[in-house]
Length: 324
Image (cartoon, rainbow, N blue to C red):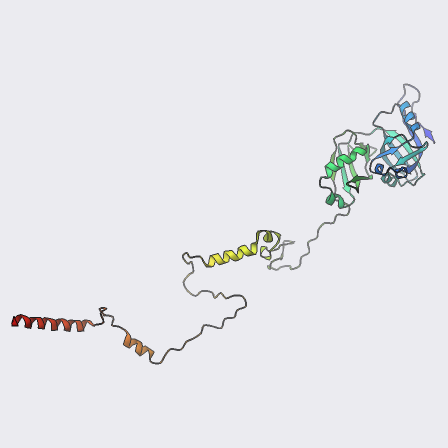
């Protein structure tokens, strides 16, 4: 193990010394503790704890992890001091972030980070939205396994047996290290659209038409007569047919205007005019013969016949008086 403390002033009373040591790194999965892959803490050897104690490094301990060969850096906390000497064990996502292979040399430095106030994350898959109904609550529980988050990291966490990956797009407060501490802090979280999210595209199919389902102002409009989802739920076709039947059977006063009316026929029916019935020969004369006089008294006699009958009645009555 190569070690150095980077003592700026050296000796007692000088500036605080910094832990700065090189280790061989290995994935934490080789210890058969795969659940530790879904956090942001590493395993270090007992000798590292002894040095940290001598240097009076305060808790929570946070470290810079440097891959000098690839010029990559991230931050991590420490979970336990149980690793073999000269070795450290990292979560799989951290090995990928630093482009490390098992056995590569890793520089670890102690550091201090400001408490985070804001972080913006981007899910790497739509499954994050489809599977998790309350992402902020789930994330709050997942971040308990992290001591720090660095801009550019792509960390993983486990939820209901499924692994989810998030990319860190932004952290606040901004600082030179590009990282924040997420230990005992009230962290506001914002989410960017998932990496594989695709905006829905509206495809016009009948531009300029007024038929149901035509495109209006760039969007497709489906008429309710076509029984959309809402129309099916309320039984639109049945209600419409009932309303038409009730309207035609309404016994109130007709509002139809005088004059020719439009001819309404069932769908698919052709109209060739009304049937013409020819009249009977001599029918008009017969009708005139049977027609009563406009001066009819209603008893089947004309007024002249009634006057003659009255005159005869008076003559008979006069004769009777003379003979008496």
